[in-house]
Length: 537
Image 1 (cartoon, rainbow, N blue to C red):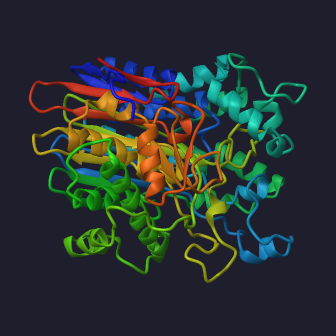
Image 2: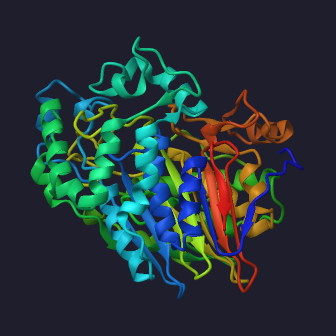
Image 3: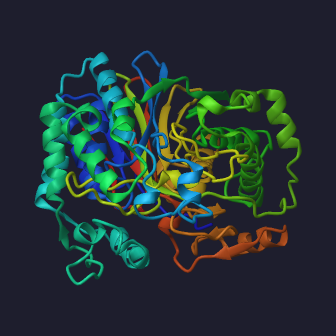
């Protein structure tokens, strides 16, 4: 690994927010500066980033919240959309499909759940004394959609890479391409007037209108015209839900993450298994190999267990007991790699976090699944629909079979941790299959080995299996990774590929905010691989 690479974290006394785009970070920081709490700041940042980072997240996606209250209790909001009433296996088979299409109207088969999660989060904000109306929280997003946002390097690159498969999807060209059909250059200002109108309407009518009002009616009409299997009745019936978060205690920290249908179980298992390996130093073979092998054990369990919460056949908490974890840890060979690849899932997303001096802390993640989701932009509202439903199978015997009303598997998983000295951390990342791996890399460095937060996030990383924008399933390491260590990993049986870039956003955009005990204040950092950062007040 490259040592001495310094990426400073931000410090503050009253509030902190971290996101992968600086305009979203500023939206949250301004709310904190005006006296808003961490949940309100996160909501403003979430709405803004759905506008300013549209290839990663949009209004047509899903979201998952972990929220810590001032008393230290952690709650969880699941805002995952279910498959529409017409989304059946015969619906696709009769159209000649052996698998669900990845792009276009037929890929837009699940409800956009994240606005329902915003509704529950806003209720939580008010319970913590928040007084900011929805109108104020949506203001930055409305302004950016109306005035336009400069295209980021990330958006430009992914538009170039995916243009051929997206250019003919209804609505995509008008919003995301130039008039001649080419990808807009970095810095080109792109507007979405219809989305601005939608957000402005919601700011007056309330977020519920997205499902059961004028906006919901327009969304349903456009989906029907496009040929999507989502109906108006589906939208009207949608509600985000609260559940108990998954929780596990390690020797040196307590962890929380999201239950199925997310892969939060994998994040908790990886760190729990690694904790049992007795590794004493960071960045060496034992650290990296141990985390990779723990990842494999966790993914084998995940792929056998994780599905819609209402259709679980295994209790996920059973895999977090000391006996179960000891059994899995004992199966890890400290010198040799378990043969791989195994089935993998891709996806992209954004993670953002916020905290305030009252002790409220947020770890939030929202996504449209693949870059640009389904590609379908609804003409009346400017909403880009996700393609999360492509993770369903048309085989009725599969772990996640397509059924109306069923929620698909999610790579998304926000995280939280409590350390013995009282530090409380909200953490997370984007990156599909890489999310639990990046979470484990950052948290093992920071919480187990004492690496400063900014450096723990910035140091070279690795990913096993598919991640966002990639179908490769081997072990990829960044170019800045220690070449000698890469050789050791290859010698142990890992199929290692060294990326050309020293630091690649293929490794995800990780971030964290920390509530320090007493008067030590707040700390935050976000990945230098992203377009964002952390700011406080």
